[in-house]
Length: 255
Image (cartoon, rainbow, N blue to C red):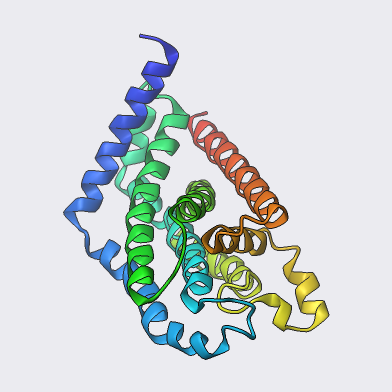
């Protein structure tokens, strides 16, 4: 069996175990959908009269991409809490005594999180269409792909941080401290161009703001080159860095 086949098999074993655990208790998946659906149904209508002011031709074509990135950030950033529980129950220790590739231990978990995020994204996109969103299929596929990349980056980083601190008391405030400014400065609800110049300049430093712009561009069907390049570049860079950090942490845990 080649190295690639061995890695795929080990990743698949970890992924299927993680997925079975989620399916035994789907309540968390459903609970995770409540907040974005509330935003979609209760906040979305408020944007319809403001479409011209926010530079959109359709409020939901503007708003659904923001909700997707919000779901990717908040859902995936909390993935590490489950890993702390696994470490406490001895699951990580049991996996460490096996010859399984340490990268496979991380990738299998991230794939579980991406599967959950994909299902949630498809539901949100479907609801968006029902509410009046107009977006080309190719744009939706590209936007969801970027959403999965940033979701995977957040999940990998969350797992790496969880395995480093091994404490919910440390992880919870740090996660809140990181996610809140990212959330506010990414322009998820309203474009940052509506704010003062200093706030827009500050927002341009936040990578997720460019990813939100890229997903909006793809949903809008204009496929503007600059936002797509910036958003895709940041998504790939953050995903690569987070997987590298997560892999390094799992390997270090083994030493």
